[in-house]
Amino acid sequence: MIGDSNTAERIDEYPDPDLRVHAKPFLKWAGGKRKLIPRLKTIYPDELKTRRIANYFEPFLGSGAIFLDIVQNYSVSNAFLSDVNEDLILTYQVVQKDVFKLIDRLMKYESSFLRLNREERNIYFYGLRWKFNSRRPHIDFKNYSERWIVRAAQNIFINKTCFNGLYRVNSKGDFNSAVGDYKNPRICDADNLIRVSNILANADIRVASFQEMADKISAEDFVYFDPPYRPLKSSSFVSYSATKFGDREQIKLSKIFHSLDNLGTKLMLSNSDPASVNPGDDFFDRLYSRFNIRRIPAPRFINSKAECRGCVSEIVVTNY
Ligand SMILES: C[S@@+](CC[C@H](N)C(=O)[O-])C[C@H]1O[C@@H](n2cnc3c(N)ncnc32)[C@H](O)[C@@H]1O
Image (cartoon, rainbow, N blue to C red; front, side, top):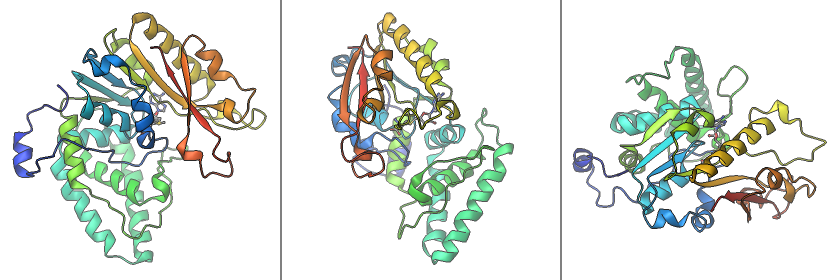
């Protein structure tokens, strides 16, 4: 069972009676689903509640908010977690395998950073970001190495101290978000990292695009798809081909959704609801016309004047 691993040694080292519960995402992530859990929970398939799901798949993992909710509240035999972001998956693998060394390193970053003044913090942040970027070509993302520990710590440090926790890279793949302005950022939440590590102990975590995962999925499984959202802009404004995950990828994903539905797999998918901004845009209604489409309020836009004022929704598609 996921989370039921041999963790006695770790638990002794960090005695905490509640070690495995309430683990939360350890990274801030654009499109993270944490705020939507209460709503999405009501849409999970009944089979999850009646223990008839064998494996859980999350092929657009990000911060893993739904994965963490599911494994802490329901019983699944295995979890298959994947994403195309190599540094994200590297960091998960370090949390899974070497959490104590990771914590040691992060604590050093935290104590060095927090005692600096603002100007010194900027220098520290950009220096570390530079190291993170310049090491990238030398990292073998395919083979786990102890050297990944420093990189994972750098990734978490940058995530907790950059502007809005936004993971953004330029065309060369260099991380380029600016420093954020936080008084006392919590860089190392050791208890949470240990909880997540214990939960991840038996999970299959890999770099993969969503297509690569499709043939590993079978009828008894549950898949949550949370791809990059289709941009919410008027159709005259957007060139979708410029985005890495454009309409072509959305269509490929819908084909996989249809073929897994034919297999009998339980499927749930989130996306933006372009129709809530541009009523003529029925892109997803057409792609998923065979399935149940719910519209739920999108928390991230509620205060955003640019997009809409509280009226933007997201879609949740299910085949059950
Ligand atoms: C909306 S985010 C997922 C957020 C996640 N559910 C959470 O709670 O944080 C979309 C994720 O898809 C990943 N991604 C983008 N293109 C992908 C692809 N072709 N295959 C797999 N993952 C991809 C991104 O790296 C990103 O982490």
